Image 1 (cartoon, rainbow, N blue to C red):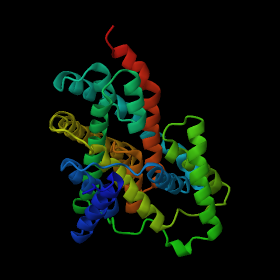
Image 2 (tube, rainbow, N blue to C red):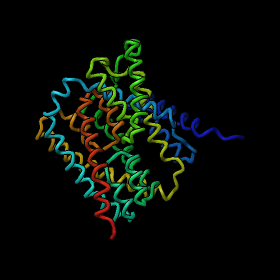
Image 3 (spheres, helix red, strand yellow):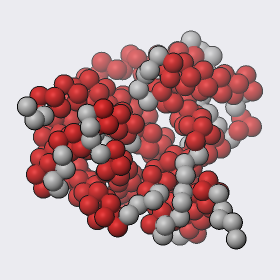
Image 4 (cartoon, rainbow, N blue to C red):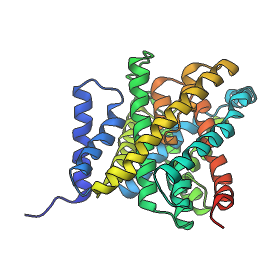
Length: 342
């Protein structure tokens, strides 16, 4: 009997995970359901596979959704975010200062694997840098996937059951309420922004390229709202698959060592983040929800989804995550060489 194609199995896992979350009334079923459904299938040995170009294309709409929040009002308010943005480099330094010794001394990783596992940057960028430095790509991939999985899973439950946030509101207006000309511009901005950013080698091309192009259209008045709710829900679904499917082919040793290290590191990150959230919120006076989502080092895409659903200031949250990734990308290769064995 022929085995089901890996992508079909992945979709089945994602749909079943979503159905379980919906049946249980759990938060963010279209993001967390596929993520954890794929994780369960992967742990059971299913040969899962990501959605490839389709999955990447769906991520572009998240960039479009973020870019649509960049309005003239946001630019006028941006200088007032200076105190919280200035805390981001300190946040990165503290994470690296604790994470690198943990992976190097406690977990016994080699230098490049330990360093790029500890850096809270974008997954793809850290894997590229780590591979070029001679690190273990599979180990780094599992550590970062676990970091994102733990933080992105914990945050909605914390927001829902501790802080009483409403995560059930639609992330946008219905499809039928968005003018056709704006829909066409959104699709074009997503596709052209993604491919254009890829061509010039921009990090996070599938999100940052559409974000920049859509922000230009928003500031010039051609786009006046986010993509419809149905598209953002679909983007959530594919983002969940992208995280969960990274566990495909996992071995018992990888589960014990790499995923175990990722879980322990995520716990350390939670303590660091909560400390920064308290300090930044007191010092800046910014809304607690905005600060919390800005200083939880989950994936940029995943935290943006949570910001959209909770009604947080999406532009504020994404500005902090983009700065975090920018700081890591600029500083990580230099610091890695300074710390490396002579």
